[in-house]
Image (tube, rainbow, N blue to C red; front, side, top):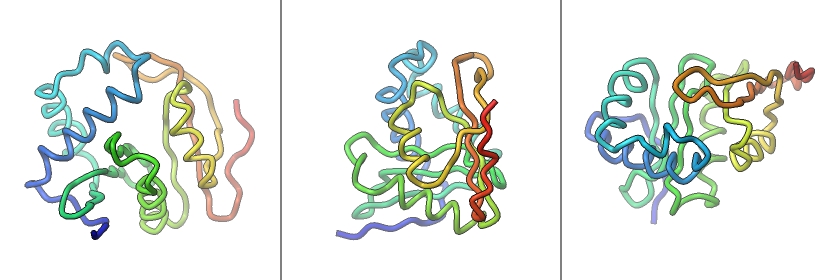
Length: 158
């Protein structure tokens, strides 16, 4: 069994979108917009929003895509792990990879109700710096996190 992280390739699209869709449905049961998202529409969003604007990496287990990471500069835009592969270290490996690519720091947003993701990020030194509302169509309570290598993570939440 081999595990690796490698750059995204166009041939990975179906596998990545499937991971994103399954993971989002499982994680965001409190978001009606996610529960209504079809796999077909997820492909459109992935192509027009994610792949068009982000650098992508995939986590691969035995030649099968099981996770992905999307970065926009220092913004950790997305990190998703297939539900069947969660709690096997993929999130930690992808965060370490993102830190190696952006050693001066990272920022991210996640939903306040996404307790598993928040715990993962906090274990890896991310600090909540601002609480707010995500953009439409979700318009759900979110939290902005920062990671800085010096430990200066803007620790005063607003």
